[in-house]
Image (cartoon, rainbow over all chains, first blue to last red; front, side):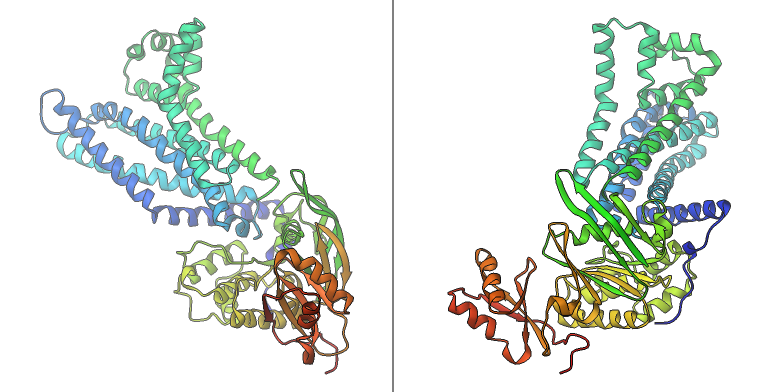
Length: 296
Length: 293
């Protein structure tokens, strides 16, 4: 065996160097995760499905009012809202749920953790890589749709469309964080994916029904209904997009009316903050759970 | 180089490792010997700091639980079977791990050359034989030239040729001054590589000995593995010990060290006690170091 360089970890590293090393490790994992994700079938399938549906919605939203061709950006953004609320959480939750649990099931997690890296680096690196892959996937869908819209309908309402992309990215990152929490505590991918699907079902379908039922049973006041509603990231997303399209929340009934009048100009920021909280809090929880885990 | 103090690890109600302490100096090699479930793998995971445990373990004076990343920088790990994304090419895998260990890219090529894998960089991990995978794991472990190599039954999934390759590489490493800690099921490995043996049973250290202490004979030794019905294994071990043989029940048959010219003796002894031997395996022909032929 040849004589080799002394391991860098042997040095007493100063704080800035340690920080640089930590970031370097995260970047290594992120790069690998991103490369693996874009080479995977799920990425291709979701990207294709999202692109086809986004283009389809932009076409149909104008056809629906009696014309043919493509609607403008603003109308397409509104049309895409429900599609995004269905597909994007599913994409992100399942991608997140498979991340750590998949590595654990394949036995690769133990091998990675046996390297000179910390659990935080592994988790944040994987999160960053998957987040980038998801955002790329969404950008491809939105980009193709936007290209066609710009060609057929000009740039009307492009601001609303960009805000829609921003809110969609936040929704995707939030759901990815929730997926990571599920993944960290699951031993098997099948279990984590099952739980992720249940969470998706709960957020997309059950929470609306639950809120309606609770408001009747407990006779919730309008401010309480609003408070509970924005706890669901999908509702925050929906309200955020509608508000940012300069549309009135009156379409959402008394709750929307209450929100518009009570919070006024602060409302978009409140909703955006809720979305950011859905990214940060579950990711922090996943990190704590992963670091404190007794076994691999 | 490595120090374990009262390591205890519980999984729910089960105490997988119980109050294990030992210390190993630079350039020494330690074998962890015991049956399946004796706690070898759990102890290795504790020593690497990848699972939490009670007690203390340090590598080069660095606490593996408090400063795991720094401690693992001094350690190369070789698992039972390399688990890495099968689609990855060797060159890419080496590049990734070189980045994690913060060594220059050229070290990847040097490390592959050191284990005889030069020229295979374009191959995917899934296309490698078992022996090549283990050599790849060794190449990764050697990337930053760590002073300590920890191996978890590195040859258990290999055929005789693959096993020979890996053992040969480990012998070179030992000769070059590396400290080795390895779990093994195979007496031939223990005899040829270990200076010291920790015999584990039910998570506890049953004996802290040497290969000579485990298989005490003045003659060149060959180890045979006898396969019997499970129900008869304990009885057979007792019979053979009474007859003066060094026997170890390691969860995968009975390992018996015998003089090279009397390999049939344990089988005859068992036959006299009406214990049927279903199959035998003669393990690699190796002698206890230091014993004259």
